Length: 275
Image (tube, rainbow, N blue to C red; front, side, top):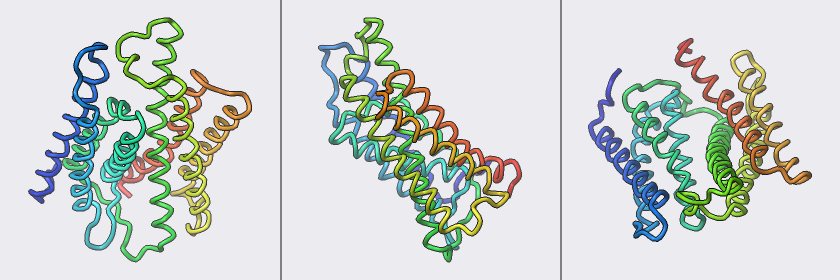
């Protein structure tokens, strides 16, 4: 274990963690405080989250944008994905009631940042890499981030649906948007994520020399499997009106397969096999 040698990066990382923790606290207070009680302004949690994202940007710029290329080592990549997720979440929260997803996502972002800080790993994408490869990586990360948001939204939606079906609408359920709004947000995320994943797969076939090479084959097959899962879910929603537990099951299944495709492959190659 080695701490980042750049003191300014270390300080920025701890300030980021502080902002994320404070944002989590304010969002939690708003979500779980009794109805009718005075609650902190909604903008407070969002503002603290955005401040954390700005600080997180600096940390990533120091650890990922290095001399000779882009360092997308396992923990750096995890931190980058959480940065994208929180950036999308906080910006969306300005116009849509989705900041409650931070209850689950902010602690994960704190953990990802701590691991990036204490366990640096190298996997360099050289500066001279083809622009097509860089586009493929960017779209893939965006797709993964959106599906991460969708999976958390699906869990929250399932909890809300369960409470309403069993006539227990009290507690934090009252602070959530209406069920129809939650469902609409979920399938907006899945639809956009599916579109990005389609572009990611297409760019992989176009720009990568051999997408079915030995070191890529598991990632490729699992990504295609995830694409089929999410495509089936969207078709089921359009054709049969899938919702509730069925939507949760398909969303989480697709997310797990996609997570195995990206981080599962990186974990085996970079941490276990050290390639």
